[in-house]
Image (cartoon, rainbow, N blue to C red; front, top):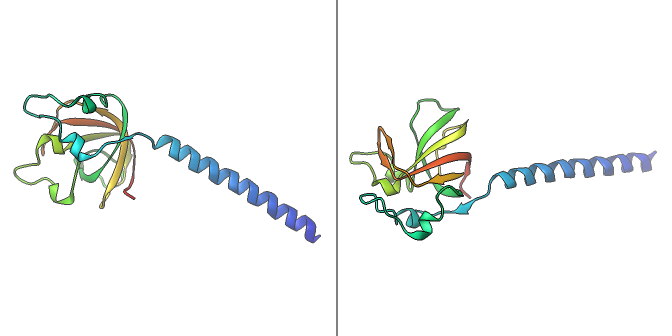
Length: 149
């Protein structure tokens, strides 16, 4: 009897391990992209609209960008639109941060409001987007948000 219990537990552990592995693999596959930092985004000349060739090469590509969320909606659990800024002090004041220090994010699916630093994954577009808080030199079509680690 003990052998059967042990064998059953072993099978259960293998099945659970496979499910965990598949879940982790699926999540990591969805959360991929070229890591983009704010130094690179700062290479966008928001007056002329010209940017470095390195930044231009990322147009329409999958990226991940760290930052802080400034929601553009009142909804706390299903935020679809927000600005991503480089620091919590860059929250929207008067005057707002320069456009090359703001990314307008439009999520494919809503996400909860993030209080601390986050990674945002999605497709980067080098286009000026206007919001009630100022212009952003970039648009990110968001796939996922996760805490910054």
